[in-house]
Length: 367
Image 1 (cartoon, rainbow, N blue to C red):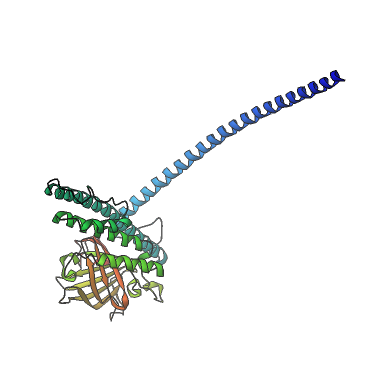
Image 2 (image 1 turned 180 degrees about the vertical axis):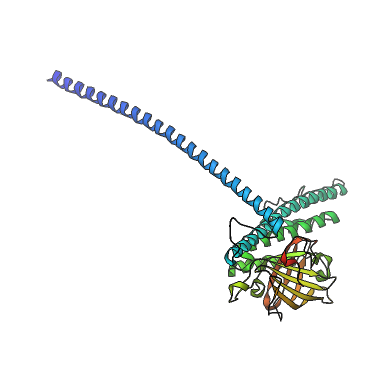
C-alpha cells in the first residue's frame, strides 16, 4: 500500500512538472510575442512621428511661403491678401479681420519681449545699486539683499518691483525700474485685449480685466501734458475700445459695417485729426484742438468719406470726439472718452502724417 501511495505521489509530481514546463514554455512564447509587438509598435510610432514631422515641416513651409506672398502683396498694393479671396464684401471683411488679428498679436509679442528685456535691465541696475550702497557702508551690515528678487514672469513682476524700488537710490536704477514697470504693464494690457477682436468680441469679464490693466498703466504715465506732446504724432492702431461708434457696431447695412483695424492720426501742429477704417475704407477728418491742460483732445468732425469719394452723414457728436489722454509713451496711447469709453492704441508708424500717400493706401488722403 505504501509503494502504491508513493507511486501516485510521484505520478502527480511528474504531471505537475510537465504542466509547469508547459506553462513556462507558453510564458516564453507570450513574452517573445510581447517583445515582437512592442518592437512593431515602436516601428509604427516612429513612422507616425516621421510622418507628423514631415507634415508639420510642410505646413510650416507652406505658411512661410504664404506669408511671404502676402507681405509682397501688402508692400505693392497696400492691403493684405489671403489666398484666392475675391474682392467682394465678404472676402474683404475676412482680409480686414485677419490683418487686425495679426497687428494685435504682433504688438502683444513685441510688448512681451520689451517687458522681459526691461525687467532684466532693471534687475541688473538694481543689483549694481545694491552693491554700490554696500560699498558706501564700508563693510557695515546692510539690510539690503545682495541681489534683488528674481522676476520669473510678467505677472509676478509688479510685487517684486514694489518691494525693490524703495531700496533703490541711484537715478539710473530708479529710471530702469520705472521703465520695467511700464513695460510689464503694457504687456499685461495687450495680453488682456488679445482675444477681444479690438473690443468687438469682449465679454464682461474681459472688459473688467482690461479696465484693471488700463488703470494700472495709467498710474505709470510718464508724459506730462500728453495731448500736446510730439509723441502724439504718427499713425496709431486701436487694439481695444468699448466704443460701439468707433467699432462701427450696430450699423444696419453691411456696406458701412466696419471690420479690421481702425487707425487714429493726430497732427497737433496743424490741428488736424483723422480716423481711418480698413473695411469698408472710410476716412473721418476733423479739426483738432488741445485743451489748455494739455491732456484733452477736442475733435470737430467735418468730413466723412467712403472709399475716399462718397460723402457720408455722421459728422456730428461722437463718443470719441473728446478724448482725455491718460497714458502716452513711444509705444502706447490710452484715452478715455464719452459714456465711459476706453481707447487703447499702439504706434504703428511714427513718421506718418495726414495726407501721406507714399504707400498707396487710399486711407491716407482725403480731399
